[in-house]
Length: 26
Image 1 (cartoon, rainbow, N blue to C red):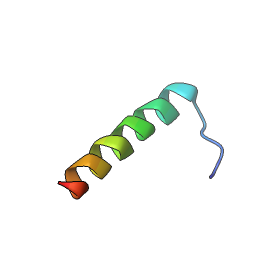
Image 2: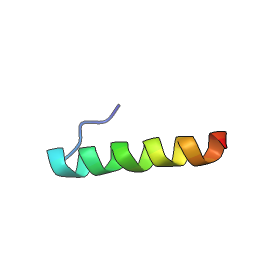
Image 3: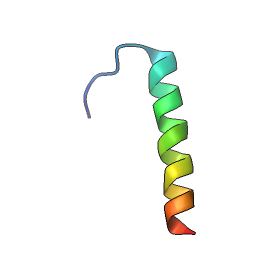
Image 4: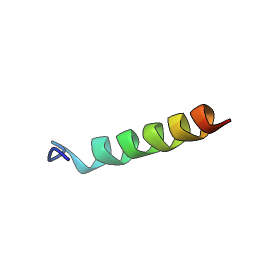
């Protein structure tokens, strides 16, 4: 995992990934 430049950006990326994972699983 690459080191995120900002904590906020990392959190947003995580949320996007989580959402994408759920959408793909559906």
